[in-house]
Amino acid sequence: MAQASRQAAWEFWGAELKRRREEAHLTQEALGRMVFVSGGYISQFEQAFRKPQLDVAVRIDEVLQTDGFFERTWRKLIDDQRYPDYFAAAAELERQATRISDCEALIVPGLLQTAAYTQALLLAGNPLAPDEYIEDKVRARLDRAVILKEGTRPTYWAVVHEGLLRVPVGGPAVMAEQVEHIAQLARERKILVQVVPFAAGAYPVMGKMLTLMEFDDAPPTVYTEGVYSGNLLDNPAVVKRVQEGYDLLRAAALSPEASRALIESAAEDFRRCVSTT
Image 1 (cartoon, helix red, strand yellow):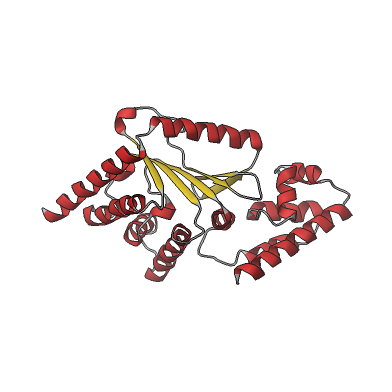
Image 2 (cartoon, rainbow, N blue to C red; image 1 turned 90 degrees about the vertical axis):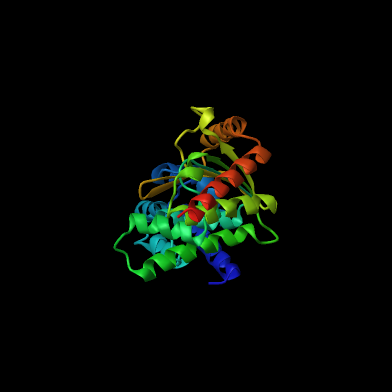
């Protein structure tokens, strides 16, 4: 589905939500409370600024008694089954964001992954999956990274722990390519990346995976992920706390210049491992 027609379809989804909500004599705040999101979130759905997660669409059907309309329409609009349901809405938001701030401890952020690194991760979690499944998932992740190459790319800032530069996912050759890829993106000034070194000890939001996304026409949103689950958080108080934690994390990390030097050193370490085997 073309981007323009997809957006028009989401606008229809939002208009239907508003119409049926008003028919039920519910305010945005009241409906939000009933489906466990904020009233502001309902407003953003109705204006097609924001796409709901599947579980929210299901709850809207239940509250408004719409016989599965919003779930069925959601599934048709989020028709890219390469992403799990819990991540599909976040993938949509990535394409709309003007600024993306990632935080990762042990896994390279998805937008920075190489094909070989992604494949190694997927095979570790799906050792019996057919080749076609793995190839589709790898392609989907690489397609997401296109936004970093476009002229209208968002400002992208990642703060990662030194540990993810050292864990040999896929072996030394895969890691040499992966770590060099991050360094190259930084050298080309397509991304900002900072590394929290082992020497930093405890650090803000330790062990958390989170993505903070900012937009021109909507409030910021935080995406967090657990085991086969994900959450989009838009509560202003929660987002503010995440932003404060991210600022502290940047302060705990090495400077971008020192971080790039450490990344390049890690890539060289893996290249030496390859040359000696």
